[in-house]
Length: 266
Length: 284
Image (spheres, each protein chain N blue to C red):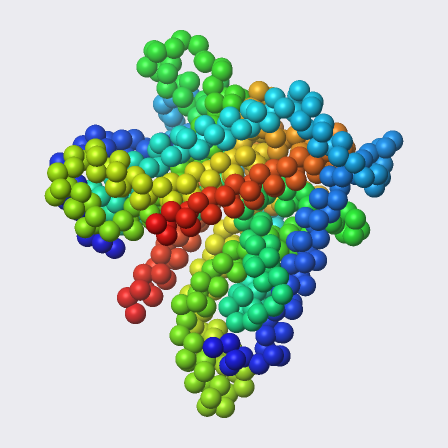
């Protein structure tokens, strides 16, 4: 962005140390979490003494955790498809069509992003109970997919606004059908927004608790499985799974960052 | 430019999301609203229209107490997140030099890290046989475990501040980055002290971002029900926990719905007000 001004004041060592403390506050808990996943003697105490991989070994043998991981992956993948499909249509509608209550629709779509998850979750639960749907993993998938239309719409609408409309016009003028134009011009142009939105939706769905909490049946997603264990007493096995979640998150960020910078350089 | 898209195209992209969102989002929210005016009689929810649920929320001392505690926790989280986030945003924007981009990413990364993982980390740190207590005893500052840290409103505030500081940082940083640097140089060239430049130029121009960040933090902590369950204990119960128990064991959906609608109204009203104020400021 703009060049940094060196004129503001002398070297602000005080401000710099304060910022360093804030960074410590943000990262220390995460570092502690990772460190204790290798601690033989449990999640607490200081200093961590005996280094071990036992908790990871235990984790990899823990079928309940991996079942819940599979459930979470299925829900998240489904939610990405559902919310991207509807979000893409909604973004196109907001960008290109005029319809009654347009601004109301825009606000409504965003509500799940703004409201506490418990309100969205409970509203959906009421709807499900009254409509006679069973609480299940499928309901969680519908819940996530619907709530996350908000994220998809926001990202894709921003992508559409940046897009060069003349390419589509040219395609239509040259005789391509609207359908062909959509597939060959509109979608490829939105590729990056689609991937960014998809990654974000995937991450949010994998981590979602509030809505899941109220819609799930007898199965479990990864966050709910961890949640259940937290209430029963904790072992570094949870540190181990948390560390793995952390690693996966960092990989996803790296992918996202790579895509973004590559696009900027093009 | 919209004429290039046919009516069929517009109908095809407009109808499915409108129908879906109306059916699976609007309708559920409306059901919540309807229930808040209904009642429970002999364990059955009946559509006897009344305002009693709302009255109960404001009359019952237990609910009022939790309501005030929630407001206090949310306000503390907001204040602390601003106190932590603003200086970091300021430092990055004006003094970080070439390390700016990497430091910016370092603040953003935790936003992608699981809420639950971060909450759990605090639980292991603050517990009575947790890392902090172990550390204090290791340094011989305390001799037995201090038990009052975890399961308190303080723990909730700490955990939520940790989670929302990056949220607050983002809009503040964006608004600081948008301040035209010549304005600051002009202020200095005209002899204003750094302090005066900050209070008269930088702070006022970053208020929209500050406000947006503060609103995020307040609204998000207001409706949180997981942090109190995780690290709050009974003395850290917040309003959303009441909702949860009313929809669960207590089985009073109408009262739970009324509290939900109350949270919803506060959230939407706060966001509407801040949006208006931001717009007002940015046009000046």
